[in-house]
Amino acid sequence: MALEPLDPREVLGLEPGQLPRHVAIIMDGNGRWARARNLPRMLGHQQGSLTVDKIATLSARLGIGQLTLYAFSTENWRRSREETDFLMRLYAEFLEIQRPKIMDSRIRFRQIGRRDRLPPEVLDRFVEVEQESHDNTGMTLCVAVDYGGRQEVIEAVRQIAGRVAAGSVKPDQIDEELISASLYTAGMPEPDLLIRTAGEMRISNFLLWQISYAEFYVTDVLWPDLTDENYFDALKAYARRERRFGRAPASSPAT
Image 1: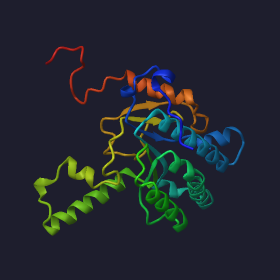
Image 2: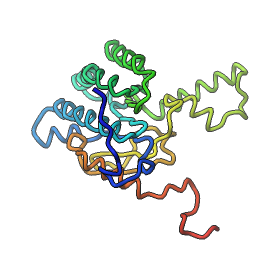
Image 3: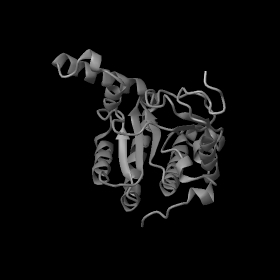
Image 4: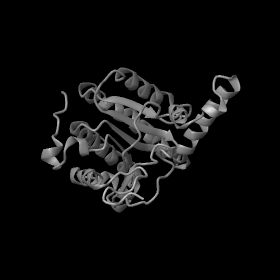
């Protein structure tokens, strides 16, 4: 069943044009949520997956164009084998459960990050849902798994260097557009709003190139505890920001 649209004027007091086109989220706090309840870390991740479903559904219903979620970084492989294996199974199971909703709601699914280190069953599931949802015209749900911003830039530089060596690109043709087109996120809009949960004030190697002009919003709420209202607060805060992209404030005289 397709999702029922939400009118941002009714639930947020905002015009549709005041919403970010692309929201990116660093989902932090699953482990702390579990520890505070004397529960295994894995249960924190399970609870966090419920929040993914909730926030993705809200975003799609509000008409947000893209939601990008930082699920697993290149550095997360340093965690215990038990935890990384659990997370990989959780991703595959989550996609299998969400697959009907993705298709019914016309959501387009994308995965960004390295693919050579993912377990075959996880990669196969990602690819299947990507291909099946490729022509969907609703919100893009992008999940960053085995993702690192520096690794992404390195791969883009290598790709461009290869083209220069082959003679198809001249060094003076390298510009922002070419670099953007060489990243995992090629063809996607840059994030307008970056949300981080659990109160941490860092970007953790996430979308280093793409968030150059994103608005940041940090909340102390742990990811599994994030409510509809917490998410709405972030969207309202974004709507109050004046995005200048280097220009002087609208109320200031030109200098």
